Image (cartoon, rainbow, N blue to C red; front, side, top):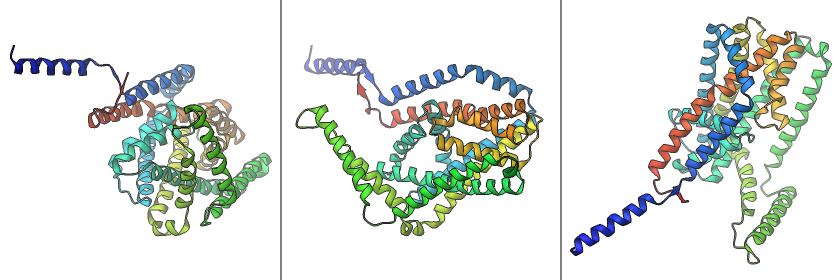
Length: 376
């Protein structure tokens, strides 16, 4: 056997060992884990899903088609919000690129109930391909939430005016507690915004950073021994606080006022699409409600979901919306049916679309980063 043949055999053997070496891709593992979590969620809610199917089959398909169109448009509004929030961060990404990502984010938030963290974590990683750092990605997420809370504030004020003009506050004095709670959280939000305008970190921020630094430093030493060679996460707390200050700086927002107010506008349109979804569902079930009832019901239910700190608002959303509809004069059975169908269109139906697109993004990532894996 010649030297060339020997070298070829060695090369082939090395290639075979490389191909046969078991590898575990972290992104593929995450995909299967999240898929399993989604299947478990469907299993736990199977009776609810079956009831939604029965309600769907008994409903008016003309109005259901309107609901589906409205929901697709709402995801387009989400993509427009993402685009303009990124423009505030001096990054230009087209709506065509962002539109499918909205379904993936929704799927991750539903499969892994984590108050929206799982979807935001994926989006932050996704935006790295456009040169956005993790810190800037966190700032973008903060800005997106800010536009959402601002838009919801507008909707709540309009709902309060509707309840006052329609005499609902007189008929249901307990509704005033919603207003008191909203004013309480609004005062906290405005105070926080004003506090972030200070150039230097406040005493509270310094105290939080100091405490978290001490915790992570102690944790690092306990994990890696006396010298503490582990990763130190203490600086991340300071980075997040600095992102809050930089994101809500009035001077910076003025420089990018147009994309900021556009992002705020799209959040209003997203909420309005959900109101129309509930309104159309009442027609589909032949239990028509007024637009003002749909507006008030959705807004108050959304408020309950936001302040309850329950991931995805599961349980709180269904129970809250049903009770509010009943209190506004809707019979119990159609009120429950509207709630379940709204949950079906906003929570369950987008899941398969998000799952397919998430698998596609994982496959594309593997093609672009063939060596970004971990040995088993």
